[in-house]
Image (tube, rainbow, N blue to C red):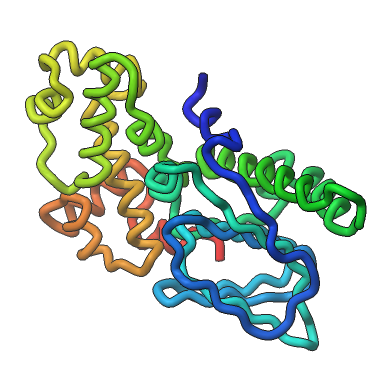
Length: 280
């Protein structure tokens, strides 16, 4: 089974649609680490406000997902009200430590950016406009599938770290458990000094066995995996307003120049250029 399919099931998360209609005025969503928030703008204009990130103004169909339920506000004027469908994403027990940690604090996409999403949204909105029996059930299930498409898009675009999910799902033989233990440590503390002997020790294996199993299961060397993990964490921190210098130290680099060099080598552009290239 591929790395994402275990998350495309109602056993890991499920949507609960709680709003479907025209919205104007202001509404606030408190920080909720136990569940996520999914907002779909069908028409009109809405502004999403955040305490630790710039406001996001939407004036065309869009989807905004807060995997960890980050605190945010919603504002729409009566002159141009927003037509919204909103759902709460409930995680299975323990799953809130996986999926939200593997994603940015906020995901914003337009339907045309995600393969297959536009016709799925058309089906969802047709159901939202109906008054037939079973409407709530179908809305919830369709939102589950909408989110699965968004997760796949996030993975393919490098914004979802499937390694985090693998670490949270650690089970099976001693090798799998040891690998999951190591991945959890790497994800929690990528800034620490992780050389091959220390990784093998945490995984409970010899260096040769560890190197072979790591490459077989992850498809890259341990050093490459750690470097990519640091870059993903750096992108999240930069996107949340961190300075290049502060982010460099938080992800394990002794200097800003060393971090910028490593970032450019893996992303093809400097950290500042990457920030400027992100969609609004």
